Length: 543
Ligand SMILES: [Zn+2]
Image (tube, rainbow, N blue to C red; front, side):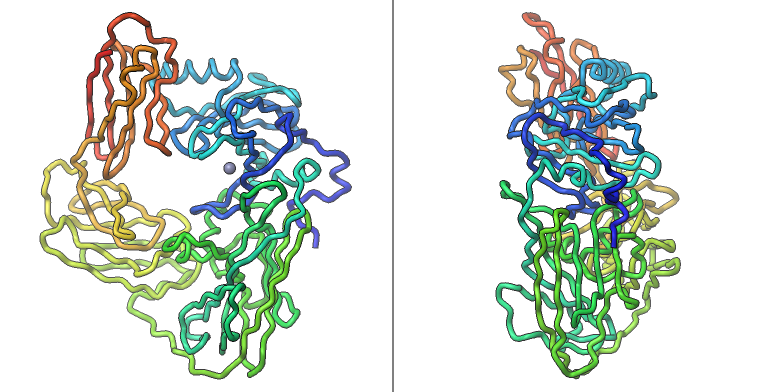
C-alpha cells in the first residue's frame, strides 16, 4: 500500500528542495526517533563537527517565525514555502543580520532572552539558496548540528524531510533488533505460567516461550546508516504470525496532538523505569495515531492450539533496506490468572475520578490509552505537609494534563506561594507546580505516580565563573535552583539591562554582547534570579 505521507512519484516530477548545506549530508538523527513524550520531529544534519556553517534556504518562501528559548531549539527560524510546507531550523548559532537586529531590539525593549516573533510574508522574503542563518549548538543540543523539520503549513503535521534527500544521503544498512517482549493480556493470557511480561534476547534465544490465551508482542530495534556510528529510529515494523500480517507501523507523519501517542505505542513503563525503548505491536484502544495498522484484535494474538506459532518481524527503512527476525512461541495449555479488579479500576473510554482522603484526581475521557487497574494508596505521616499519594505503582502516561488536588495538613511557613506539588520518582523529587487555594494545592499531572506537597523557600544559587575575563566582556555564571527551578533572570550592568543567554542543558548564563561593555572602567553588575516559588537571589559584583 502506498504510504499517504510520501508523495507519489507522479506528483514529485522534480525535488522542490535543495540541500541546506554545500557539503555532503550525514544524519545524526532521523525522523520519528523515540524521545521522551515525543517523536523526533525532523532530521538532524551533521555540520562537520563545527558551529557556524551557513544554512541555505531549501526553497523560495519567507521567514514566518523566529524563536529563542533556553532549552528546546535554542534559536529557531520557521520558513513558510509556497508549496504548502513550512521548514523549521533549530539550534542555530546566528540569524541573518536583518533578523538578528529585530530579535535584539525586542530582547532589549522587553528585557527578555526568550523570544517568539511572527512575521508577514513581505518582511523577510527568501529565495532558494539564500543564506538565512548559521548552524549551531544552541538549546537542548549536545553537539553542532542542524535540526530541520518539514511541517504542513495548514495542519502542522510533521513529515519526514529525508524523503526529499535520499539522493544526497546514502543508506544501504538495514535496521537491527535485539529483543522482543511478550505481553500476556491481563486476565486473558499467560506466558511461561506467569501473567507478567517477558523479555527475550534474539542473540540468546532460550527454549521457545510457552503461552496460552491472548498475548501481544513488542520489539526493541534501531536503524543504522552508511558512514556514521549513530543509531536511528526504525521507519517501518511489520509483524506476521504464521505468515499472516497482524500489525504494522510506519513512522512517517504525525499531527501535533498525536505526538504524545508515542507513550501509547511504546512500552512506557520500560522507558520510564529503565530508559529502554520497545515498540509495541499492539494498538491500545485509546491510541488514535493514524500510522498504526492491525488485525481486528489491535495486534493481539490468540494462542489456543498446542503447536508452535511462528512469529516474524520485518523491519524496513525509508530506502527499502529490510531485515527479518523469526521466533517461535509454543502453544501450551496452562491456567490463566483471572483479573482481580480493584476499587479504582479506570476505564479508558470514560471519564474517571480517583478520590482518597484529602486528594482528588480527575481523568477526563481521552486521557487514558487503556484500562488501568489502579494500585492507589495513601502513605500517611501526620507530621508531613500533606500525605503522600501513590496514584499507581508503575508510571502510566496521561495524554494531557489532568487536574490533581491535594489537601495541605501542616503549614511550616505562612507564605502560601512557597508550596508546590511534588512528584516522587526513583528516589528523587520533581516539581509538579501548582497553586494553593482554600486548604488545597491544585495542579495538573501527565503521569500517574506518587505525589505529595512540599515547600520551596530556598533561593537559586549564583556561581560566578571566569572572573578574570569579565573585563573583556566574557561574563559567565552558573545558576541553579534545587527544587522548583529557574523561572526568570535579569542582569543589569551600571543600572542598564544587559542581555544574557541561559542554557538549560548546562545551567550557564552568558553575556551575549561582550562588545557593548565599556573597557577600562569599573562596572557594577546586579544579577537577579527568581524561582517558581518566588524565591529571589540577588547578588552584586564589581569588575
Ligand atoms: Zn533534532
